[in-house]
Image (cartoon, rainbow, N blue to C red):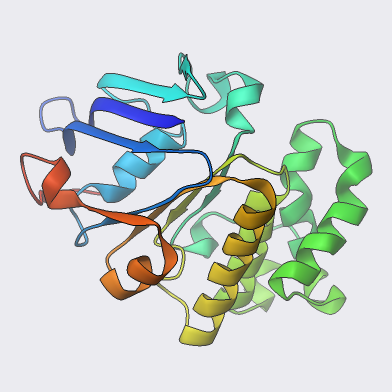
Length: 226
């Protein structure tokens, strides 16, 4: 179980973006977090993925309270997540080929020997050819780069996926393709999913249940970076 308990978080303690929010995702469950831009969804998603330390509240992962964040989190907790962000160009190192981008988590965890086979497997799943894998981010489209970012998120076989507006910048065909990849991965592994978005039709088709931001936050929609 992934549990967020009474989370308060932001970028200035005097004006939190998220205040007293609780949310849970069960293993194998797909939960859609629905709300307009600027209401704090992405901030909460970053807390859920151990990328942003909350000011208050607790994240409980598989029954264990989280004590560290980002690189200070225990490796077992860090590697339990796969995260895909809205803007792939902000989350991809422009110096790396797509092959190196996908393999990056394997190198970081000392599993280089798996890279060739695992990258080939995931490239096929997300629809990237060998020719595209040799290119750098500036040489591919947003959709192709987001395919690589999704492959990178799956490369360590995470138990939890956080997709923060993953398809917001994509056309309909690429959106459908990437959602299908996530769902196939979930069917095979039983991974839980937190999908953040502002499109109720997409989340309704994609997720087992939807949670409206207005039902979580007493402040409703706040102006924020989230």
